[in-house]
Picture 1 (tube, rainbow, N blue to C red):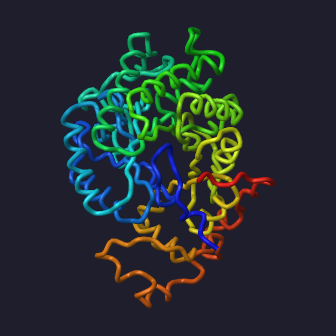
Picture 2 (picture 1 turned 90 degrees about the vertical axis):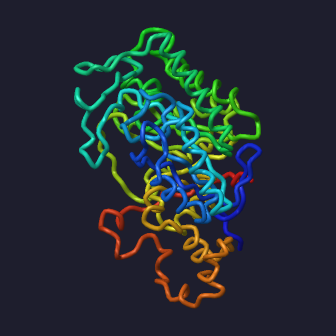
Picture 3 (picture 1 turned 135 degrees about the vertical axis):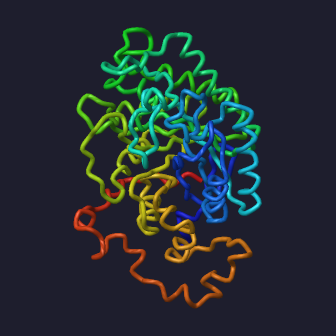
Length: 393
C-alpha cells in the first residue's frame, strides 16, 4: 500500500511531492533583518532533505515587527537581496519548494534572543516601540491606531510582493504564537472598543484585512495561507469554535491552506505529548475544504502516516525533529516503504544500495517505545475520526 505521507498534494496551483513540511524555525541570526551565512547552512541543509516544502522562519514585515535584533526581515531592499542570495544556494542543492512565513511580533518584540535570556531590550540595546491590539498595563506597549493599522497592513502587502519577486511558492501569514495578529484575535489581549475589538467578527477584522492585502499582492499561482491558533490554553481565550470560524473566513478570502498550532499568547499549563495539537487541526479540517497542516510533537514517521490516513490533517509540519535529523524524510521513507528522490551525491545511502540502512533500529517507527520518558509513554495518539474525510489531493 502506498504511503499517504509521501503522496503528492496541491496548495492552490502548487503541487508538492509529499506532505512533509519543514516548519518555520526562528534562528535569531540575521543582521538588521538580512540573512547571513548561517541561513545558507540552515536552510541549505533542508533543501535536499526530501521534504515537500521548506518554510523560511518567521520574517518581520517591518523593523519594529521583529522579535529580536537577530530576526529575519523582508522590509528593505537589503533584506530582499540577502534572501535572494540564500535561496539561490538552497535551490542549487535540492528540488523541494520553498515558502516563507510573514510576521509582526507586536508586543512580543524588542527582546534579547533566547540564549541571552529573552528579556526586553534595555535602553542601551537599541529597543523599539511595541505595538499591539491594546495597551499592556505596566509596559510601553501601544495600542495600534488607525494609521498604525494601515501602515502594518501595507507592510504585509509589501513583504508579500518581495516574497513573490523572490520566487516563493508558498507565503504564510502568522496569526498565532502570541504575535500581533494573534493579539487581535484573542479576547485575552484585545480589549478594544472600536470596530477591531469585542465580538469575534471585530477581533477577526484586522487579521482578515491583512490577509486580503496579502492575497491581492500575490498572483494566483502563489499559495497563500495562514498559521492560526487552536487554543490559548487559558480560560477566556480563543475557543476552537472561534478558530474554525476564522479558518472558514480565511478560505472565503482565498486561503489555500491553514497551519494549526496553539498557545504562546500568555503563560499556560500545556500538557506536552505526541501529537498534542493534532485535535485542533482535526477540528479545523472538518470546518473547511482546504488542506490543513498539523504540528506539535510529531516525531515518528508512523505517527505522521497515521494522522494523515486518519484524516486528522493533510500535511505535517516538523521543526525540532528536523534539527535532530535534517534528513528525516529519508528515514520516514525507509520506515514506511516509500520511494524518495535522493540528491545524486547522497544516492549511495539509498536503502536499495546501502545494506547499512537495514541495520537500523527496527523499532524506530514505533513512536511509543520503552525508551520514551514516562510522560510520553502514557500519552496516546488522538483517536481517528469516525468518518474521516479523504486526504486532499
